[in-house]
Amino acid sequence: MKAFPAVRDKDHTTIFTHWGHLHHVNAVPVSRAEDAISMAWDITQHAEDEGQIALLVMSFLSDSPVEPLIGANAEQKASILGLISLGYLLRQERHEQKIRRMLGVGDGVALVEFHGDLDRHEVVIRLFEDWAHYQAFLQPILSNGDMNLGKASTLL
Image (tube, rainbow, N blue to C red):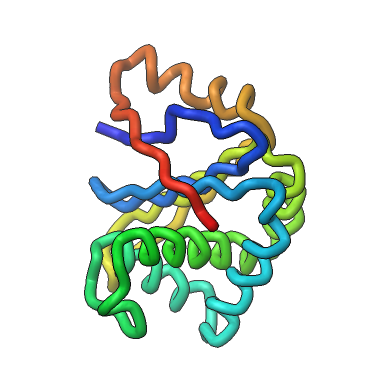
């Protein structure tokens, strides 16, 4: 069964990160969009490539002990996971401008889906600039009954 965010936070862009049965939802408020972009770049700037960031996201989703957050609480890890996912999106040249626009408007949904394992994986990115387009994407999934509604968390 798939899990997708079901609740829209007004004036927020939702980032849904998904790998197998593990998933996490973050909401970035418009008022903090520039801060989130800056922090996402800061966190991911030392990565050699997108693959390294993808491994980091997958490790966080599986709650693997990753430095420097071994002692971090769940709320801190959730915010960092959202920022790393955002950093991954910003590193994708074909998606960077669109995700920036979405963050500025606060009505979009970004789905970042990981398939495979740590050694062999692929990432599928789906960006919906508004809630209506996201709902249209969900309609066939809802009609098949193949959906689990996830709980939301807040980024920043």
